[in-house]
Image (cartoon, rainbow, N blue to C red; front, top):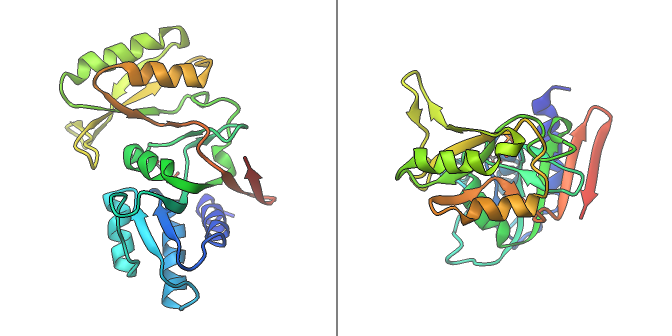
Length: 235
Ligand code: DER
């Protein structure tokens, strides 16, 4: 099975949790895309009715519009019944790293407002420690004096051998701009960052930081699709 087939299996399993009449948080990324497609398909087949989607990015908003999924927002629906979204890393306590697609702020707002948050991953996302994979830990920051903020973030985790990099795109390395008109600094760690709650609070205390990609104690269920089958982990 390819990685994308595994993502699709996890996504379809998660959509089994969706009931007619639900207000749904619609995730962002290549795994969540399959879940949103599936929801659109069930709506079209009349197997699901009266669904309201709360998208976690402009990209998901567009996908949902193209599928005819009725949409709303947190202002109108401050409580969400169920959110389905992917993750970049999942630790044994169901803590997550998210945001490598750049949508972490709206995802955290929507998923923080939901009763159930079902995470869908292929098995490659499972890690022992968050940030341990050496891959990016995203932090959304305001563009104003971004170098100053990036340097403070790097300093915060110097014991963990942290390197902070502004996320850019294209050949002229333009700064990546989020849906909320902010920048993203990606943190790369050489060593374990220790207590996640302490790290989270320290990052959020820096003026200029908007939000980070550690989703601690938020997932209620994680669905893992692997070569040997699908595993459902509940909090
Ligand atoms: O950027 C994000 O937050 C995405 O949800 C990410 O965490 C998972 O993206 P993927 O399903 O494409 O791996």
